Image (cartoon, rainbow, N blue to C red; front, side, top):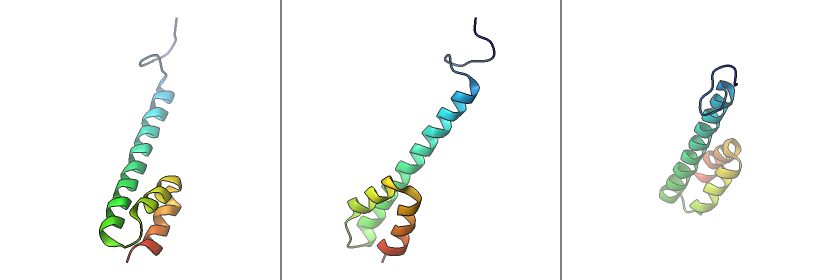
Length: 71
């Protein structure tokens, strides 16, 4: 018999960790979409490549985009 509080068979710590991970992934995807849209509208550089850079290295990629990618 399981002890403690569970939700869907998962303890509260694991559930909070899962929710935080999903939220971080959604923020990262939103940054990628924003970078692609902004690069497409505001620069002559390839927007797809900037989106890949921000996806692979979110913080560094975003800083590089602001310093080098925007006109």
